[in-house]
Length: 454
Image (tube, rainbow, N blue to C red; front, side):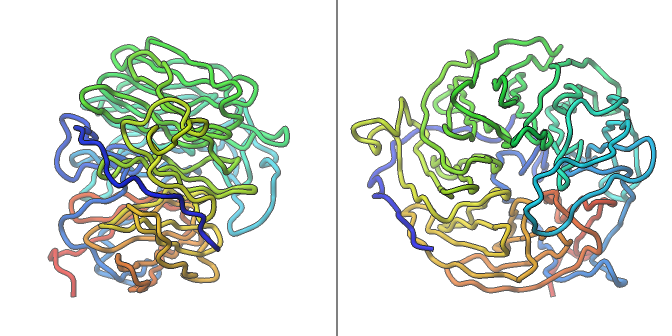
């Protein structure tokens, strides 16, 4: 696909950008895509090869997870947290593989929404807390679940948001501290609820939630201490639907929230909810989460006519799309072709990597926007899970449970093709020299017992 890359700003304004939440231990992975949503952690060596369908020393443990959920594992200290939805009867059906099915899942009975905690070292379940029980208030897509969102851990608080089933805050031992009900949040298209998918973002004692129900889209900020609503900003006419997780960062001591969306990507002031900047989006089903590398904000989407990659400076301001000089307003580069639909990309070194639902991995120069390569990993590499990376390796998880290990760099090099043995749509976590995968039925730890790669 031909790129329509725009010109690049020659100089990026000098500023102080803070991404890592305070109080974290090294190698913690406390939220979707890790501490700063970049999906990259360098540290102890990770294995290139493993196979859960055979006896393999790299498979350190495997634990059963009840129910069905695409909630990704998060790791803080020696604990792993995931969310799930357990049907009262039977087993929840899930469509696996590519397909154009736009229907909601049928015959959905009562569910139990739960937050689970496991021991990171052994996989032993430490506790399970039921957040809500009842019939789902909104339907889900046949490829989605009723527990798509990833929990966020901040200090001694565990925050879980299930959309229509509410917001919950626990301590690390599983004691419920408070809960809030926001009513029905039906993220729908074609008149069908496709399921809620935006995980909570936590920063400086505040919880930010994207509730882009097409009938009443809004961004809301709550106080971590007690769940009290601090502000709510309407996104009417800014976004019709959204499954993307908001991204919070500080620049020169001022925090803002970047929210993917269609037709607009918008950034808000965290203390007040006031708009800071906006830019036209492209893909009409926004899923990937924004993130920052070296003072550059990366946003992508890919559904419908356009598949943009948008890269902005952290000092962006105003309506960038309608500015007389978009570069002066904050645009670094933009292409309308090549973005990702479901999977959030990663930047490793000078290169941006994007996994797609057609099995294609694309690479762009992260600073200039020059397209470097486009390679099909495998005909069946349907990538919904976001990419993660460590030590120059990119881990690309396909929906069928195959994990492709690709070498970072300007030339495509497939290092390994590994099997998890079960479908996997959740993004893995990396912590303490281990990869943690949440499949449709299990939580799995992959690592090197001696900490060295062959």
